[in-house]
Image (cartoon, rainbow, N blue to C red; front, top):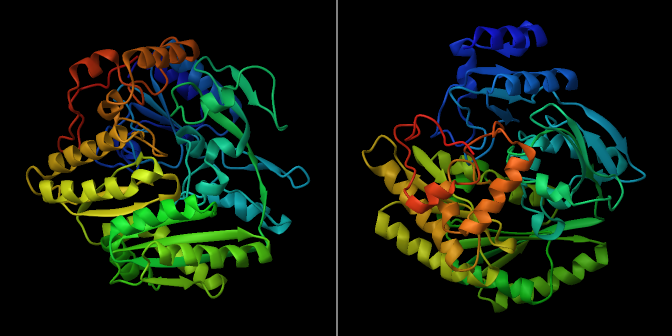
Length: 483
């Protein structure tokens, strides 16, 4: 480490806010996608805006790359450090700054947990709609970086639809105000550009979120099906009937059994697939929609339809779905979580093809996803201790993402590109589009020091179309390519 660089950091941060010892750095070597690992040069944990600005300016002066990190729950390697770079942790930016119940908004720091927002405003009869499965742990800053969704994103949208304004630091330490507390703001819509930019354009230091009034009633229907294809077709039938559920989720038999063993949600373990359909709104409206959805589900081939009898059972049904990822982790040494999005009308076709690929690769798949908006999360089960299985899982995952693109979808829905999907992104974007992405990056970060090598593949990489394989937990290149 450059002595002058280290001296500058020490002069800026208190001793407990600068980590440079090997053992202290180890917890930051990966995010939730733990197959990729890299120990950073240093970890900075600023406690004030001025400290964060100073860290960025020092790194800019010494040409040191910076990777911003929230709660570390990401699933695409987006917060993977660089060996010659600094991790800028926003964990200590964890305060709710203001709650404006009259205007239904809250100002929060990026380290605030997603669920903590709803907990803080519950007394006002309000809540924050995006609810990723990791909402008990994930931070709002990370949600902005990845444009996270959740089980209720079908009706209430992704993070981008629920954020009103941001305060963002550039690599030079300049503070930008983006968006506004009002419904519109002057100038270009940089708020949408920044949301989902995976830390490539700036570091989020404050978020103004939109709050919603809790509905008078919310009720869940659970429908069982004899095949995943029938369940997939039922999703299109519900939406086609003109009904917009608050959430419409699907799980196949493997994930049903895993979740039931883990959570005891009361799922029908003999079903090939289940749909969870939540309806919310005024009491009379929900009653009418429940009857309509039951009719559609039975017409679409459901073998059984249950209605949650009370709030406790509703929450239990959702606990099984939100606990599906850790539940699958109990039945397999390792799993590879994919994230792609497809048009709803192709659900049955894509699920059938995933089943065929599963047989081809000899690896089991647990399908858990946001069926209503076509956001798939196939979990590929494998054992990294078995030679060749990790590579097979990765190749299988890449084939699933390519399939998503083939049917008119995308290679990510809410987990981002990170390092995991750089090759898959090559199959989706043209050279002209990639060049434009790099131009936007250069406008915000000319030196290419913010989260370099993530989210947008280089034109050279796409020309070669070589696959990035996990190699014993290490990247196949000594350093990630920079912009």
